Length: 106
Image (cartoon, rainbow, N blue to C red; front, side):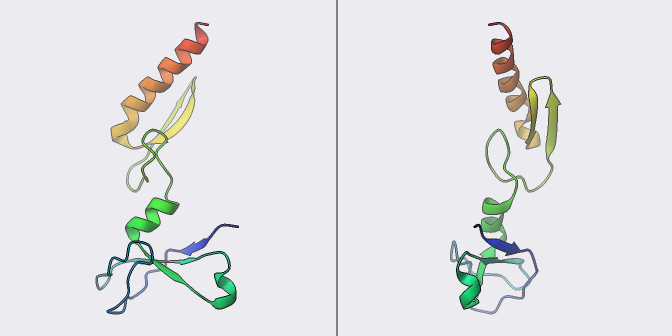
């Protein structure tokens, strides 16, 4: 079973830190709460900074595998489909078309 998460905006205390990277939170910064398997019994909640939460939970680019946090390009072609960063669109499309053409020419 995976972890559950919440994107609720929490007000950090002065000593609040990301449980993953140990970065301290700035006042007003968005904190994500994560409950890991087994934590429900103890009521433990882990705090994650926006960056670490996105690395774990955001949709990944089908080309570079980095989290997609802004604009997403959805590509649909005869070779399939994918979701990529705008800057990855050309490289991803070229790679997929070359692979598709090789299969087609066999």
